[in-house]
Length: 176
Image (tube, rainbow, N blue to C red; front, top):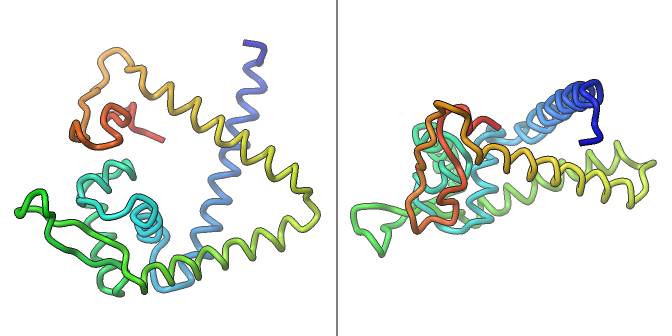
């Protein structure tokens, strides 16, 4: 590794700045009718398609109770619906409604407009490079989560047929 501890410490400080940017985005997105966390649930559900609440919680790396609360908020606004799971009549699937798709598109447009205004002096290549490097960082840090620390709780929470099976773990390894 050709990276110094000082460089890594500076990277960690820069990541803190990214967290602050995320909070700014949260405030911008939440100016609509839903909290940013609920909008994250909506976006994940829109991408993944119909899902059980437990699978959605696993994909978001949150507790089922958190996902359920956020889904209740979305359902109250008519952004998600529920239907019986054809594979298991005891369970239900949640899905994004047309109103949910419209709300998500509106919030995304607001956020993109904000970025477009703020980054008007950036070149397309700069945005592409930053995007690629952030994705690489996320992937590399994600890979390190799969290596359990001694004594860590590494129980897998996803069901074997779930696409995230063996990907997410509980305990310290699940922190992101």
